Length: 369
Ligand SMILES: Cc1cc2nc3c(=O)[nH]c(=O)nc-3n(C[C@H](O)[C@H](O)[C@H](O)COP(=O)(O)O)c2cc1C
Image 1: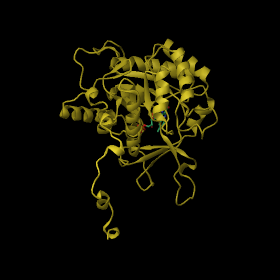
Image 2 (image 1 turned 120 degrees about the vertical axis):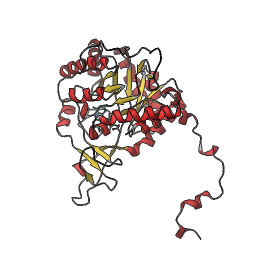
Image 3 (image 1 turned 30 degrees about the horizontal axis):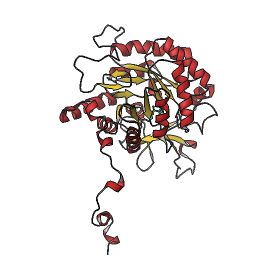
Image 4 (image 1 turned 180 degrees about the vertical axis):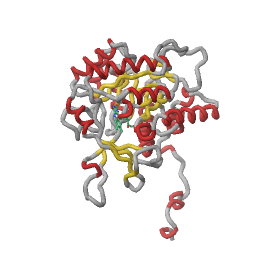
């Protein structure tokens, strides 16, 4: 692995003379490409972070931390299951079917803050050498501690911070371990406080468990966020037909390819409300380069991929990048030219032309006279 910053890549945040097709901007920062290795268990330790950097990710968001002991201990109780389209468990690994749903009860980085920070700094040096942005990630527990940690992240020389205030688990975990913020006013207060604590590029990660994702995003931008990541996973419960118990015993964070349309909807609605200058990061449901392109078409400047990489390995990031590059080359487009095209041509139901009993073509023969 490279261990110095002497490689030829320009610093993240500066533009190349001839930008590549894949280059993108997220708020103030330039990324060499829009594929972000997003936080989950495979980014707890250096090996997984290195693998994501080596796979070519434009950015890597490391596994989150906070001061809550309960959130750390929750990792010790974490369980994970991959379910097929009939809700039956399948072996965890790269051979799982593409339409798999992942249901989990995750926790946070298990070590102390100092260890987490030292590791992030070491990984950042390796990321810089590959023109990759390493992003620190804090999940809100207590605000004062979050602000203090952010100050230390900046003082340690890290280059960007994601502030996750929208985990799926707040209602299920020990009180105060993590947060699911649903009120735009509170989002504004939290982000304003964080903005006051650090000058770093600040990405705010929001919940998807809301009808008001665009309003939450607006509040975050008004309070000084550089970008907003949308949207966090949902909670679900899968009953087991044999045991009559919930699978893994509790409600779970759930995700899968099927969430992509929801993410795209939130991206498009937010772009319509806030305009293209509000930089969005799509997350939740992308599993390959075409899905990354779909989220970019919906308005994302960059796209996070987490659970598919945890399940299948970092090669998925490499393949996603190759597929995205091939797609863009085929269309002779750049990421920036693609961004928001579908969102901007999205119409309301009332704008659509009348069709002659179109619905009849979509019911079975037995139900037609
Ligand atoms: C097991 C697991 C652990 C996760 N841990 C974190 C975390 O520490 N911090 C965070 O911000 N998001 C975390 N996430 C959320 C992911 O970063 C991502 O938002 C979510 O999984 C949806 O994206 P995906 O469809 O690519 O998995 C975790 C997700 C999973 C499945």
